[in-house]
Amino acid sequence: MRPLTNEEDLRNPDQLETNKLRPEFASQVITFRRYVLNRIKPKAMNNKVLNGSMYAELVKSYSSSINKGAIPNIENAWSYVCRNERMKAIVEGIEMYDSLARKVMNNKLPLSAEGLKKYHTQGKEKAFALFKKKAIGNAADEYVKELRKKIKLKYCNLKFQNDREFNRVATSFLNQEYTAIEKKLKNNEYKSLNDFEKELRLFQSFFLESGLNSPNKKLVVIEALQKSFSDAANSFMKNIQQGPENDCTRYPKQIGPRNQ
Image (cartoon, rainbow, N blue to C red):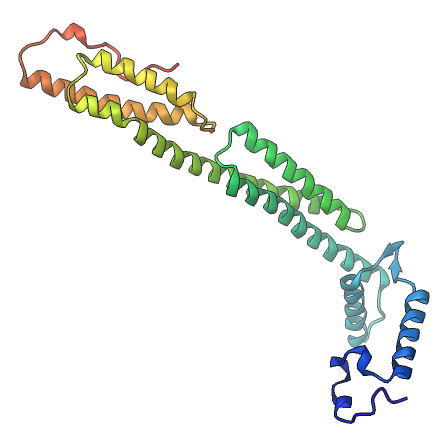
């Protein structure tokens, strides 16, 4: 039965809507399609239903053996399919971890060490759950180790991004909040280096109590204030040398903010 009466349309029948076909032909197409879908059974091997890509890999493996004049080895073909599916499961697991990592880097950074570890654990659990769901056959240790290794590298990169973002935010915060102290120092409003040191300690406490999160938070502010203290000490010593003789007991014996 011809699907169409129009010769011009017969050249591209696949691009036509069903209602453009002859009713008798369209009815038989629908009947045949229903027959196939109701009776056909999905291809399975070793009690595992094959998806399209798995079936294609089997066909490819069989065709390759036949073209080489060999008898197709079902066991070897299945092993190849399993290996291919495990590799794809690793890729999808990493993509799952990356998806969560992107959300963290776009909206959450910087985080505390505990907060970052929490998101890492969630991402790792989701990645391994997806891997176990997608991988077929016995999940060999080498594939599990490979997934764990890749996730560890991703986590190291995430920590690096977190530290870099914290340093950026912290530097901006320190520069902005330190302006008042720097202005007083330039105007010689501190009576002694000891008074300046006390204000630095108050500033350090203020910074540590701020909402910025990082495992290196204390180290960052100490390093920044130590440099400020060193510059201030040089300034005070220069003033002493240029001005009248002063009482040296005004200046502390210890240089630099003490660790709290």
